[in-house]
Every structure is written in structure tokens, then in C-alpha cells.
Amino acid sequence: MRIRRLGRNFSFIVLPAICCAVSLYFGYNFFFGGRGLLAWRQTQDQLSVAKHDLAAVRSRREALAHRISLLDGKAIDPDLLEEVARGMLLQTRPDEVAVPREKR
Image (tube, helix red, strand yellow):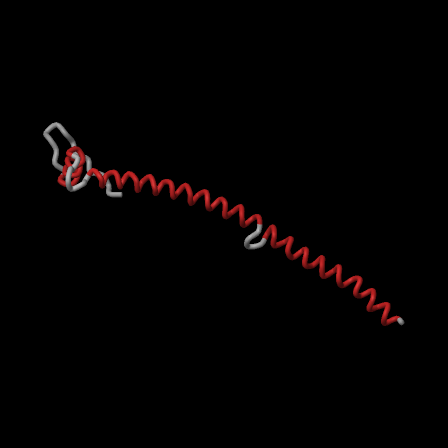
């Protein structure tokens, strides 16, 4: 009779203990796990930084695309041609001063 009572008490203790352990495991991973709330916040921060970088790269690309369109073989923009030629040859007029720029 004592064995039955011990087995019955054991089942009343083990089942809630297992449920609590599983709940604690999933609760911990919900907040602190690799894909939990804290990791989600860090991912959102990284995403906002990446979007900012993407916007900067896109604007730079558009500026370069516009500059390339000015160098079209059919109709070259005379001002751009003069700017590029003066920059490459460092030629100036007597009243001008040429200051070479660093290449980016």
C-alpha cells in the first residue's frame, strides 16, 4: 500500500515539475534566445543602419549615373569635359590656380 501511495504522490509532483521546466525553458528563450525579443531589437537596429547605408549608396550611385550620362558619346557636356580635362592635365589660365584633389 505504501508503494502505491508513493507512486501516486510521485506522479502528482513530476508532471507539474516537468510542465514548469518546459515553461521556463521556452520563456527564457522567448526573451534571451537567439531569436528572442532582445535579439529582435538588435536586428531592428542593424536593419535601420543598413537602410541608412543603402540610401547613401543609392544617392552616390545616382550622382555617378548622372555624371556618366553627361559623358554620353553623342553629346558631351562641354563644362564637364573642361572640368575633367583640367583635372587630369592640371592646366590653368594665367589668372587661375589649380589645386589637385585626392581621388575618392
